[in-house]
Amino acid sequence: MRFNLVFILLAFLTCQLSAQSDSLNKPQSEYLILSSQNDFYQYWMQSDRNFTNGIHLTWASHHFNNKVMDKLLVGLKNPTQKEFSLGIGQDMHTPEDASKSEVDSTDRPYAGLLYATYKKVTSDYWRTIRIESNIYVGVQGPAAFGGQTQNFMHSLFLENKDFEGWHNQIGNGLILDADVSVHKMLPFVGKLYETNVFAKLHVGTIYNYALTGVQFKFGKFNDTYYSKEGVRQKKPPYLHEGEKMSKARKKLMKKRGLGNTFQSLLPSLNEVKQIYFFTEFHVGGLAYDGTAQGSLIQFESSPYVLTQDAIQPLILNWVYGVNFNIKRWMFRYYRVVENDSFRNKNLFGWGEISLYYGL
Image 1 (cartoon, rainbow, N blue to C red):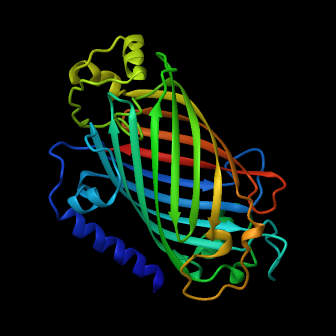
Image 2: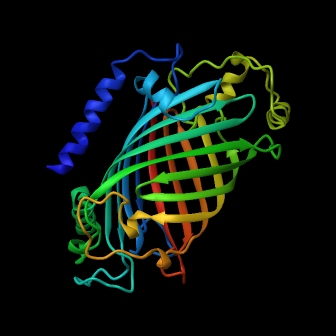
C-alpha cells in the first residue's frame, strides 16, 4: 500500500505541474534515461556491502518546466538553457555478510530507499557555468521494498543467493532531501578534451554532506554547457547569442574553429556520433548518513542503526567511465570507487550502466 502511494503521489504531482504553462518559449533538451547500479558491474571489488544495488528512471521534458518548480529550485538568473526532469529511484544498502539472519553489530544495517526526484538544470553556454538542483521525496524502510527487489535480482543472476537479514533493515522513515551543485569549465581545454570543477551541497533527512571535485573529459562529445547529458536531440533547443564569454569558452571556440551564432555552432552541439572517456575526483565531508543512521524523521523504530561516532566523515571518491552514442541512442558505463564510510578499512566500489534516448 505504501509502495503504491509513492507512485500515486508522483503521478498526481506530474499531472498538476505539466498542466501549467511553460516558463520558457523554447524547448529544452529532452530524453529518457534508464540506469542500473550494482557492485556486479565491475571486475574488482565485487562485494555486496554498503551501496550494492539501485535502479533509476528519468524523463527530461519541457512538461516539467513550470513557474512553481522554477522558483522553488535553485538556478542561474539568466541562463542560455534550462532543463527539467522527473525521476524515480530505488536504492539498496547492505552489510557484507548475506548469510546472517540476525543483526550484525560489527557492520552497517540494511537500508532500502524509494523516492521521486525533481531536477532543474540551468546552464550558461558562453560563461561555461551550470547549476543543478534536486528535490527528493520518498520513503526509507520496508515500504521501499528494497529487500524484495535485491533478492529478486539475485535470483535471476546469482543462483538464488538471498540476503537473509532484510527483516532487520532500518525502519520506515521520510526521505525529504535537496541538493545544489555548481559546475564550471576551466581554461584547460582543447579540441578533444575539457576540464571542469564542481562543488555540491546536499541536505535533508537522509544525507547531509558537502564535496568538491574536478572532472576531465577526452574524446568527441556534445558541449557540456549546452545539454546536461549530451544526448543528441531530434529538435535541438535554440541557443541565443552571448556577449560575455569565459576564458575557457574563448579558448575552446578558437581551438575548434567555431563561430558565435547558433547555426554555426549547431553541428558541434548536437553531434550524431560521440565517444569519450571521463574521470572525476571528489573530496568532501559527511555529516549524516541516514542509510546507516536512519532518517531524521522516523515513522517507526529500527532494530539497529549506527551511531554518529561510527561514521567516517571523510569523503574520497574516484569515478571513471565511457560514453558513446549512435544517432539518438547513448550508452554510458562508469565506475565509482569510494572509501569505506563505516569500517574505515578498505575501499569499495560499484558500477553503473545507463541507456539514454534523445526525444
